[in-house]
Length: 282
Image (cartoon, rainbow, N blue to C red; front, side, top):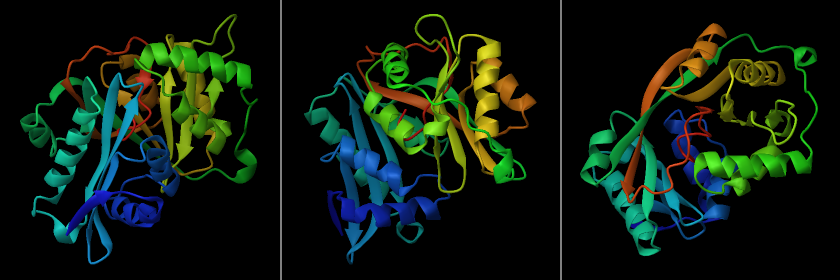
């Protein structure tokens, strides 16, 4: 076996692993990692096949994220996941990054705790399964202007704790119909992005301070998506968001715990965060 840096040629191998795991990422998501962190994504290779992955992404060197820790089912229980995770942590420690975050499943939480990750807050994945609307029923509202997107990126930096406009810009280019904002006098204060996943459309980030604004963004996502399966990773403490999701037919699927390792200085703000971008990106 060989642990090495991931390249674009490994994207099909990574996509195979996340498909086997039932994860929703696409080749476009893998490209986002490689474009943002070309030296910080890793694979375990055996007989020229990718059998494990781990990816990192740094946000302004204020904090970093670890995601896409995957191992081929035929190679599990051999320490491959731990080896990949150790490599990702070591890479970020050498930059250095003051804090590293990840979103842990209940199964992975004890392992991350042993590596010094501590819980921050809880996230709940919600899924809606519906009859896929006919193409004629899918409505696409007005697209955001470049000036509007620029103002949103500035607000998002304050809320997230660091600049991730490179990711939001990529989402807006790939799925412009999901880049939305509630009209307001002055800078927008309610906005959302989304993406077309492998088996479902995914809403996130979803940001709103008031119930009417949050409801409007969720409603727009529902009418703009042509898919029968929709996903939202909601912040559990945001009861407004969870109530709106439940009222819209979403059902909780699995819990996640946001965890941090290191000096937690750039925390961001949770007051208007309804849903995260996704557990792989934060």
